[in-house]
Image 1 (spheres, rainbow, N blue to C red):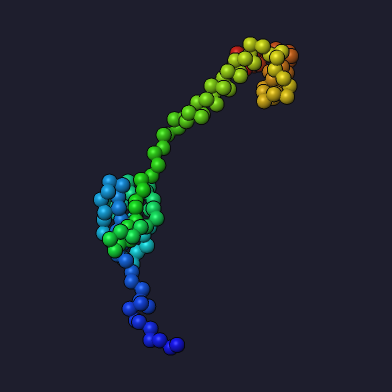
Image 2 (cartoon, rainbow, N blue to C red):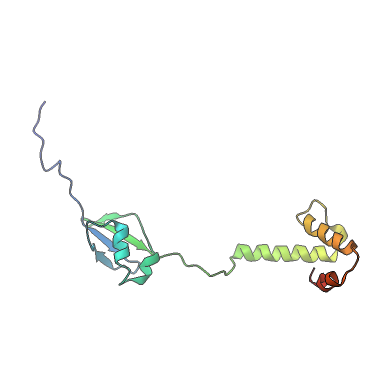
Length: 137
């Protein structure tokens, strides 16, 4: 069963690479010897937003390996998320309830440390320095 091996079947063919921008524009490979990440870095002078972009999984399209370039996620520079806004609103509501009825605060609640500190400060003798900061407590 020694069959001759077909040399065309044992050759590895390297597919040309292409890089697809988020706009849909497909760019040719800058240098086939570079890694995809190095090619991405080489595109930065012409496409500045690519500096923070990532490469997706390549797909085979029309005899070429196409790497999608993904834009970086949008960041909001500190704008609170909806979940954060709800958490802050809940905290403010709990503090408002606590301030209106301090006797109802359970010593095992999440506000135990706040309750203990305020209770201790309220029981201490007044001093000029503490009296100045008391409105802040």
